[in-house]
Amino acid sequence: MLFRRFYEDSLAQSSYLIGCQATGEAVVIDAHRDADLYLRAAAAEGVRITHVTETHIHADYLSGTRELADRTAAELLLSAYGGDDWSYRFGRAEGATLLGDGDEFSVGNVRLRALHTPGHTPEHISFVVTDGATTDEPLGLISGDFLFVGGLGRPDLLEKAAGVEGTMEAAARQLFASLSKLDALPDHVQVWPGHGAGSACGKALGAMPSSTLGYERRVNPGLSYTDEDAFVAYILADQPEPPAYFAVMKYANRDGPRVVGGLPEPDRLSGGELREHLRNGAVAVDLRERDAFAAGHIGGSLNLPFNGSFTNWAGSLLPYDRPLVLIGVDAATAEAAARQLFLIGLDDVEGFVPAGVFGEFSLDPGLERAESTDAAGAARRLEQGLPLIDVRSASEWSGGHVAEARHIHLGRLPEAVDEVPGDGPVLVMCQSGGRSAIARSILLANGRRAINVEGGMTGWMRAGLPFTTEE
Image (tube, rainbow, N blue to C red):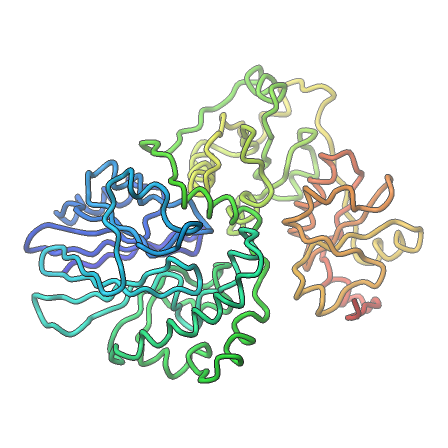
């Protein structure tokens, strides 16, 4: 048996290639959109991709299942569940084989049996993997977003991300019922989940790439409940805010992502090309760190540093209906950033402009600067009447915030600019200064004079300034 795990750091996401070296067949499960990654791996291992499947309709990235099936002519296998609203709408047209609970398929000597495990989503299936060349005992469980290392898939995404009201409690009860499917599997079965630490598809996910059912039964808090109501209360509490782009992904993956044939290759833009794209409505996305952006940037540009949070904030803050221009990066970084954007369906990248060059393009009225202050400076400006916007998560806000602040989560800010008080300068704060620097650029692009509070709430508390936990 051949087993390969692929981990996409930008999404905290795992996908798998499982094959039989004796017959040269393989299946890819939960592919992301970079199909070339799996094609290269299969070629290196000397197998051909004969089957492509996934555990559910994903919310945090654009699925590559359809793309990979198209490029390999592999058999497409999809969940038979989901009802009228959440079954795969492209499956019938693509000739997909629909998998029900207990259905099996094989790649050579390796058998995969589908388990219907709804809760995170209604159509969710997991796969019990058996290496038939060795034993009839199950080896592992491709658990998708049903069972994680140290956690369970969240059942509130249809309601909170996709806007399907009144579904999360029922989904939590489905998830509780699905856990009984694990009872028939022995402790030695390995758990191969769809996400790791950092994903918003669950809470408190572990960083280990895999586990065993026996270990999870001992330490996973979600598996400790015998009372359904207590489980529902636990699983719905303290879930993180889902990124705004999750709704876009859910519907696109349900209806069928378009087949594109390969990764984007952004071109370096000349000064004239940059000006033309900006005149035609392109969004300038400045990927430099906040200090460089503050020292001089193109007016109206959004500051999204290319770091570990880039994909999350890009999906939540960038428009899906306008082209993008990447600012302040070299060719290699532009290609890496364009790939991450591509994974979440932001395909229209017109090109890039390197750091240190765009200032020579004679932009009218020239480059702009951005302001910042420390905690003491922010306190003085508060006394002068400047409003303060706190862009942290709800849980961070509840743990302590400046009494005079107004809470607007960063992911909601583009649509909530009108909620920012007044029409003059405004202070913006997060925990340390990174997210609020992004917020600063959003407000600047909307014509507001915004001042970033460097050090954020951490610096505020260290300075001994007053705060509250009251709403």
